[in-house]
View 1 (cartoon, rainbow, N blue to C red):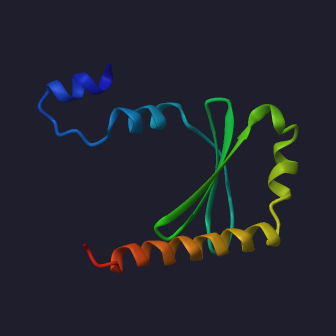
View 2: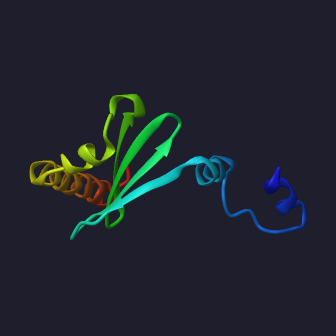
Length: 106
C-alpha cells in the first residue's frame, strides 16, 4: 500500500488509514455556492453526502444514490427553509459544545 511505503521511508504519519481511504474514494461531485456555508456534494459508498460546514461545525446528510433521479432537481430543492433549519442546528451544536467546554470537571 502507498501509505506503508511512505512510512517505511521514515516520514511522519499525517493521515489515518480511514482518512486515506476517504481521500482516495470519496469523490466531490459539486460545490454549491452559498453566502454563509461551505456546501459540498460528495459521492461515496453508493450514497450522496451533502456536507454543510459553518465555522468548526459540520452537518452531513446521506442519501442513497438510487433515491435521487435528478441531481440538479435535488440540489435546487435546497431552499431557505432547509438552510434556516441547518442554521438552527449549527447554533444548537455550538451551544452544546460551549457548554461542554465550560462544564467544570468533577
